[in-house]
Image (tube, rainbow, N blue to C red; front, top):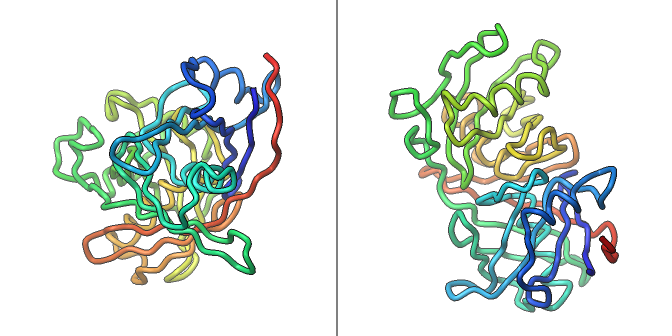
Length: 278
């Protein structure tokens, strides 16, 4: 079975042309192919298929086999894959996801695809949308105890649930240990949550480290960058509506308006093409 592997901000994905390969057990396939020892190795797997409501449909699965509603870095890789493979030939197109339709704009430099911009929609601050068991309208700088440590969390839905912790110094926060513990705090987040630790560098720059639901520690997260920029602005940590997010694997550019509609822009790169034999 032919596949491509792409990365965006260090978030790596396996892409399969679902128009050619139909009826696949994607849960099982994601577990096998994303395994970094016995498979190809990736944070997630995506396939494309026909859509009745958009130009194309994206199916996304995390490396643990769980289906994800949406993936920000993933949809940029998906967009490059379907354009490079002439599955969709337009420079502006729509993608159906489990989190709704996302509109894509491709930007070229010297005939080479440079940036993929994604209209990510509006950030949902309602706690019930996450969902979350804390009985408040929104979760902003809420104190919780995790692994014996008091932490202030802010949580939103950006297609998928994201929890953000603003830090002054990363040395005081074990991202992997706390990220895992918060993800699995199902007494607070019944559907689990992604976890982002952010450090404000200046008014338009934020450093981010992410623990992803269903994929563990990753080098970047598009939806997490969107959620983090929105929360930082909401809390008054930054004043700029244009934010450069410095993920461990690369840079993502976020723009938000007064209603917290988000435009995400970034690059995507094809790492290799191959054939999976198992």
